[in-house]
Image 1 (cartoon, rainbow, N blue to C red):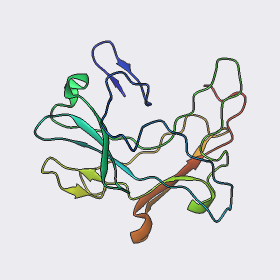
Image 2: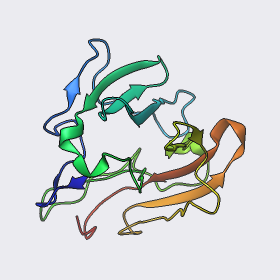
Image 3: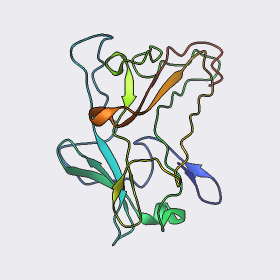
Amino acid sequence: AMHGKNMEGCFNYLCKGFVQTSKSYSVGVPLKASTYGSKTQLETNHMIFQDRVTGDWWLRNTFVNANIGYWPKALLPELAEGASQVVWGGHAVGQPNKASPPMGNGLFPDGNYRHGSYVRQIKIIDKSNIILDPWGPYYKLESFIDNTHCYNLKDFGYNGEQLGFSFYFGGPGGVDCGI
């Protein structure tokens, strides 16, 4: 996230200021890659929420119902009253003048969530701490892909009870991706 008057920010576990509280679960641990079409698929469920008392932003593993750690409210003063925008997806970063890395399992999304990377059961938490689906007159959903030759996504909107609001994303990366 980019924040502050100097537009400083980061997007991974190397972000300064994250306070790890769990001894059992950590941030930034790579998942063993699943193979396309394999019967074994890895999934991890997380939520980020603001503690209404402290103002800190917590990362929680919802599979095991355990907090992993938090970003202190002092790091994100512009989010003191909550967020006005939320973003889900993938981000690939390569080295200058080199091929960009793959995203997800390296394949373009084909519409079958078992074949690639996906985000499912997308929810938001309102000011009253009520968990809601992201649709209706107050919510605007947008897709952003900066290079469809290298990466793409397929937005499925609401896709039944198991998947909820979901989308699939990924791609092979490569040269001329602009990263």
